[in-house]
Image 1 (spheres, rainbow, N blue to C red):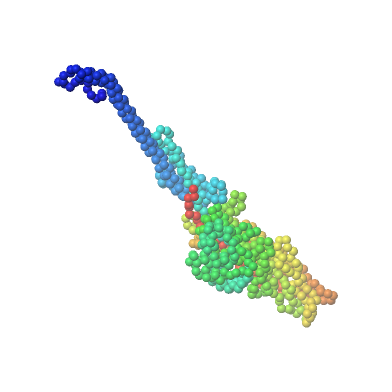
Image 2: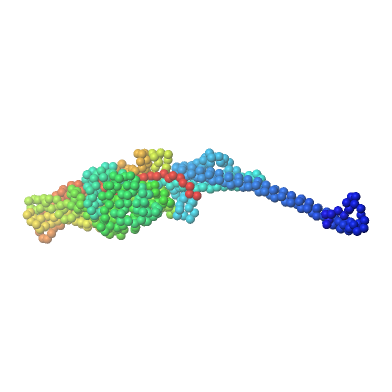
Length: 613
């Protein structure tokens, strides 16, 4: 109603009732006018409030947007810092095993950071490099203690100013850890530089005795296997293990292990050596199973792995001949010392029989240098502990004084060699830019070698070597001995060399090399023992006449002593020569060290740096 005007239309005449209507309209309009005016005022105020709210909203959005720029800048800086930390850690770990050590690693990290635009100034731009050891068996994985150092942890920090947000600069940091494992694979023994026919025949006889079958490797076959390398990762695949840790826990028969070696060689493209090794993949009657991972002398295995991360060994290689020799000995060993005696058919002059007993097999080693937290060496190879006995062949009887016949060595006389386990521990690896400059250092302690001559094979430190009759005397034309020439048991004579340092490098272009600590020929330390033994045999009073029964020949038999000495000495000299020139070199292929320290280094791998954290 308030929309109609209470006044009459111009020109209209107001009279009577119409006039009353006009008056009523005027009164109604006058009552409603303040309400309409108030409504218009409220609407205007509401419009003004909405504008203020919109302004506040847009201001908030602007603040958030500007703050997002600061926050985005922080995240961008953090990402760049992480890239800098990653690259610096990788640079640091590559030099951590060099002689410059942690100092060199810290310098390398800082130089790398600066080269990537991180202007280190100690306040706005800060870098901190920690050297340590990465070990997956520890709770924290990375620690600043331990030996050798194989990891570098780099933390970079930058003060980032706030452009729009109020407050001090924001401290932003990033951390990266890189690890590089330098891995050496080695054994105590000797690779074959040259093998003569006699040594080859003896090796076949010993290996055949271990495997209880006939072996006929040629000299060329043996030398070829001595140069063949087997990837541990390919061996893992051949044995069906999911990881290197799984490989170490694998237990198989000798035959299955040898077939796995064949498969690993084939996978690497070495079909020639695979074919040679196939001839050695035989079933060993009564042979013990072979566990790949070694657990000490009480539970011997093929391989001692000294790595914080076993999977790092995937790039390492071992020697094919070393592997099959160790496996054959494990198959015929017994940790309780009751290993079977293996009779070896070897045609050696002056030797009626040869027997071998593997007390403890050797162990190959793959790992890093340095020591564990308890101070024990991290990576250790062991030599075999064996007992070798030679029974001397009887000589033709000799007449003496046209009265008696002297039969030298008519009863078994044994020369026994017992070799205790020796060890080689990897002390350090220095990886440089060239193979010639890269080297591994090892501390080697050969096992104690004992030599005896007597009536049995007893020949250890606590053994009493029994006396033996080295000759019998009969009346000319008779068959019943009337006297005997006795020799007291001689030995054990011991060679106990101390620790020696062996350094391996790649100056030849390869790390598959053999290194001996001195220039002496293999067996020279045994020569000193055989010389002493010969002197004891020839010493006055060493031999004595033992009269059998009652006879009157005692006074006339004394010349028999000098005759026996004259006949026995060259026999022993010949047998001892065989020990030095034939038997001991072949035993070294089985991981037996006699006095000298000879290390067969199979491979050396300088670790490729990798980020782990």
